[in-house]
Image 1: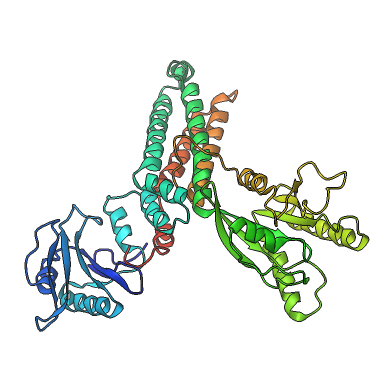
Image 2: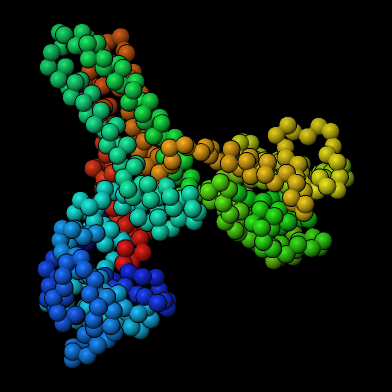
Length: 460
């Protein structure tokens, strides 16, 4: 966890660089002295007030809007002062330095990354899932990702977790109460429909897990690598998918010598496309490095589009090289679920007989088959459009729901065992509740909080 969270803090809350408006934000207990020193007047709560921001000599550093939010009705739950000045870097640095000067007596210090939102979490203004959604909303790379983060920030994910958690607690209470009456435990559990309650919980977790995976996909996207021999059309495909001339395309083999990356969106899902150097025996050191990086990208890919050139299919040297590449790809990926065979230049040559049924025929130059390719990528990612909307989620949320699912399955096994083991079932339900609670921060280690909030920008 970030330390010294009772100290008053200050930071520039707007992005670096020049802009029309820049904001300096303070948070802490008892900021009235800072308000008076910086603004030269008292401020009405939650009412924007225009005036000068003063230096030590009472001279104006700048003029702008000041907003004061007394605790607990603020973003952090503490007193919050926001100074909206002109967005020049020098002006904001002068204002920041003056804040630190007038706040020296109360221990005002520079905020660490994410510390404002951490305080909102610690003071009960947001739960942990909502706090993470703040960063997700800022970092969203697609409209769908932004909307899903907004739903999480409004509490859609947290509310669903809270409802399931409450039902889990009720089942725990039932099972633990039954432990006190071992001679009647079977009848008691049957009358209370413990089996039905447990099955309903498992179904809810399955649904939540599916939605969380969709949310994690919207947040993190998928990495798609374009690979193949030189001049099979990888760079042309990158340009076609991106809708822009990002990569140089020439008839010269080996034009691309290093990876080129571009993020696109397909139905709102971020897709990180990586164009790689052509796979062949390199003729010089620079190309050798590029080919080596290509294989490294292939190994890390969420999906691999292995391109084939229909105009060269059937040529002995080309087919031999393609077979060798295919064998190495299979070893690296340890299976074919990530691999898509894409046969390019279908506008110039007909497809030969015997192609794998899952192959795709495209023309990167003409755009033929690209929509089918986009849909195949969504299918590989496991994307489904949920009618009720998707909330943003992270890998840790998916892992926590998966642990909850596993503990509930073990609880089910203990309930159905020939020798009913209620004490073991109760323990599995307790562990399931703990895993579920870690999503919203009910059970969260300090080092995890430090990892989460340390990735935020300063001033947020």
